[in-house]
Image 1: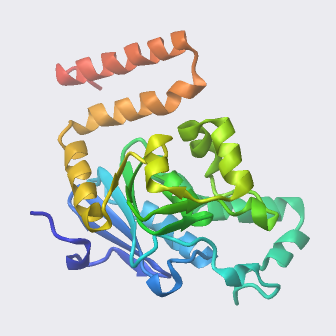
Image 2: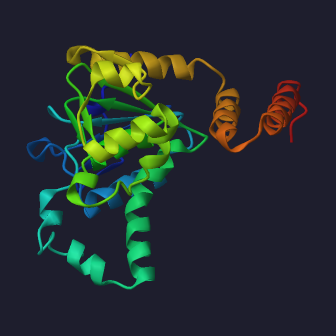
Length: 267
């Protein structure tokens, strides 16, 4: 039986983020339940570092949040005129020149980009609130299993902002343009039942069963040969940007690589 995340020595444990590794499965845990795992630039830097520290043995990464909420979004202190001590406030960012402002946001986005690497499959285990940045962090993962108490909401637009932490692309891909626009522009809650119905979540389970459901999915993913999963993920991720004939060609090239590898003829 695999160890629980709490039983393993952390590879990383700082700024509200803990990374543990158990052979082929890594677990990234948001560890500030008292603030409903609110997000800050320090947390984003720690998340980006977690991605850099993943050993090559890892095939599945599980993202979870301690407590009753996955992540309730931005730390509200970020929205105050003073901001978080040691970090640029929104006013500071607004006063930056174009290059500095773009670089700052790009740095924040680094926490959200590595989850879709072709060499891993990432699973978000989402319970309670997943608001704004929390919603976008769940969207950064390949797959989402949700507890039946989950409440997704994209609140940036209601604050006069836009979702800028890489969430718009996967949201449109999952639920379509019209539904994504409605969810973002209204800021309304999306429940577990609706999330499954519209393709936002793969599965909804009772909150008490969330960890077990994630473990079952991770085990199923690990049952397939790693290189075949990597090639398949790359094919599926690239499909929206290819024509039908281009995708056929990509399938042929990927299968040729697999056949030669299985025959011992790979490079």
